[in-house]
Length: 286
Ligand code: ATP
Ligand code: ZN
Image (tube, rainbow, N blue to C red):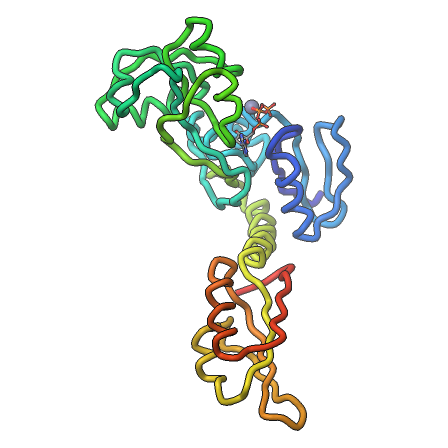
C-alpha cells in the first residue's frame, strides 16, 4: 500500500483554520468533519490527525504523526526534541508578564522571590534565569489572569494579543518576554518514503508563503524613465517591459515585496508612472 504523510493539526482552536487553510492553498482537497479524529486527503498522500495542540509535539515525537503544526510557545514549553522545519507566520502572539495595576514595576528584577502564575513555566524560567531572577511558578492551565485577585500569585505570565482580558482583571502588561507564531515541526527520524512526500508538500507550501509576501504590479511609464523604474522595482529577474502602441510610453510588469510596496509606489508616482495596477499572487516559485 502507498505510504502517506501524517500531519497533526489542532482540532479546534486558534490554529485550526489557518493550518488547514495553508494545506488547502497547496491544492490539497479533503473533507473537514470536525467530529472525526482522522481524515485523508483526496488528491495527495496526506493523512490528518486532529488533536489538541498540547498533544502535537508528543505525537510527532512518538511517530504517531510525521509532522505537525503548533504554536512555537507550545513547542518550546514542551521541550521535546523535534526539527522545526518552517515558520508559517500566522497565529502571532506574545508571552508577557503582567502585574496588578498598583504594582510599581521597574524591571524583571522586581519579580525576584515572587509567585508567578503561568502555563509556560519553562519558557519563563529560561528568560528569568538569563536575567538572574529567581521566582516560584504557579502552574495553571487556564484563567491565569484571575490568580493575583484570588491571592494565588503576585504576577502572571500569559499569552496576550489585545490586553483586554488583563485590563478586565486589574492587571497591566509590563514586559514582553517571548514572541510566537505557528511553526511546522517534523519527527527527526521520519521514514524516507514519507520524507519524499513531505518535500513535495514543502515545495507547495513555500510557494504559497512566498506568494503571500509579494504583489504583482503593472504600470505605464514614459519610456525615458525605464532604467530608473527598473532600479526601483527590481523584480524576479528584471521587470518585463512592453512598448505601448504608437507612443513613447511603456507598460511594465514586475513583482514587488509586500513590505516594500508603498515606498516603491511613491517612487513610481514621482517618476510619472500612471495606471498602477496591483494584484495578489496565488503561487510563486523562486
Ligand atoms: P486546545 O484545546 O487545542 O488545547 P488551546 O486552548 O490550548 O487549545 P488556543 O487558544 O486555540 O489553544 O491557542 C492555540 C495557539 O494559538 C496558542 O498556543 C498560541 O500559539 C496561539 N495563540 C494564542 N493566543 C493567540 C492570539 N490571541 N492570537 C493569535 N494566536 C494566538
Ligand atoms: Zn492547548
